[in-house]
Image (cartoon, rainbow, N blue to C red):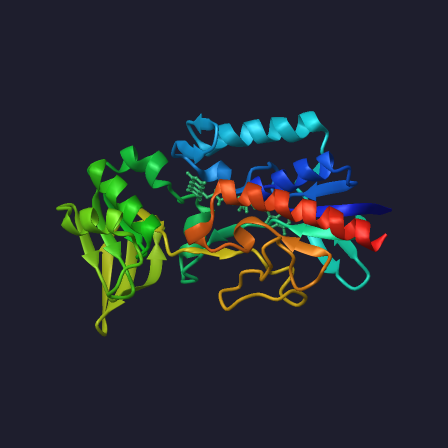
Length: 304
Ligand SMILES: Cc1cc2nc3c(=O)[nH]c(=O)nc-3n(C[C@H](O)[C@H](O)[C@H](O)COP(=O)(O)OP(=O)(O)OC[C@H]3O[C@@H](n4cnc5c(N)ncnc54)[C@H](O)[C@@H]3O)c2cc1C
């Protein structure tokens, strides 16, 4: 059955939720489509305290997720979770999921970003075995154990520090000789007696069932033991549905103007799908949601 909507929001993290709130406020007939069973996006994996979102200080991302879900449900936003989008026809403005077809006037893309993968043998098996750990949440289980952290940015360095401070012996493996991590993390990591920093080292295989990883360094191959392997090599925007139709930059982020408008006038992008990690946050994602929907409502008024 064909359903007609003024606005479809794709993605139910902070950016998409904010867009839904503003769609409701501005009287746009909308639906938010989320591929996960739950709304919240990356909030569901924030195990640290949230201290930088104005007016709320919360124990974790889940606490904020619960408040946001309450908020959209109380307002009566239209939400659909566990949705698989098959195709978007940008010419005829049709969106097909596995169960519905929507005709839309406008789209807000809020699909966020996901951790980058190494794409090496054994990585997916490790993920499938649910051996994906959070340095904040799981650090105590690695006290007295050996862990490997892969990456050279803030998240790798911060994770290495948290684990070492909790009593783990950490091998930090980075493929280049320079680091992207801020001094705030870099200096204590480089000085920490329990952190061994290996530069110019490329991880080639993971065998998590035997707690092993393999890497090449200076034309020699090595293996190393690790009770936990933390892959922290950055994030990438979730754009595969749009690559043929919308302009992206050299790192794959959707290109948009300061209101969020993309290379198509009826399509806006908000949050981490169009914002690089240095500037991404819950606050920027929710702010962009508001700007995009207000701008879209003016666009829709001008075209009817
Ligand atoms: C460990 C960690 C700690 C963090 N700590 C903080 C912090 O303290 N303060 C702060 O401000 N920020 C923090 N952040 C960053 C913050 O969480 C993000 O900037 C924010 O969540 C971005 O919101 P978003 O809505 O753009 O994207 P996301 O939160 O990534 O949400 C995107 C949503 O889109 C959905 N989606 C993706 N593809 C599709 C599709 N094809 N169809 C339907 N749905 C789809 C996803 O399932 C997801 O629910 C942290 C992030 C992490 C990972």
